[in-house]
Image (cartoon, rainbow, N blue to C red; front, top):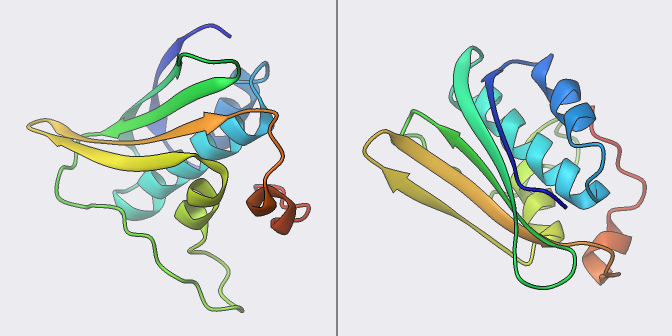
Length: 134
């Protein structure tokens, strides 16, 4: 796959737009990218300018997904959502689908990233059932 860099505004309408623009990528890559974008919307705020990058890594089907926002203070945290909660599972999904993930803080913001290996069955993937992002 090709490397991609997109500049967009974090807003609810940007989520399906991002999913559409990444159409040629593996489902897990698209899901991780949209979940990281949704985290910016929810925790930094709608209207925040973001950069979304997808970079091919060494090895077949390996992709690094990065979402950069200008707020270095609000750091993502992997939390357990209550069974009845309607939100709070974004990073749980990213952690389950990605080989690894993390955050890099810089003077102008932070980048939340993950590395996804496409087309490899995992127990985490099968336990997610038929989740469809909204």
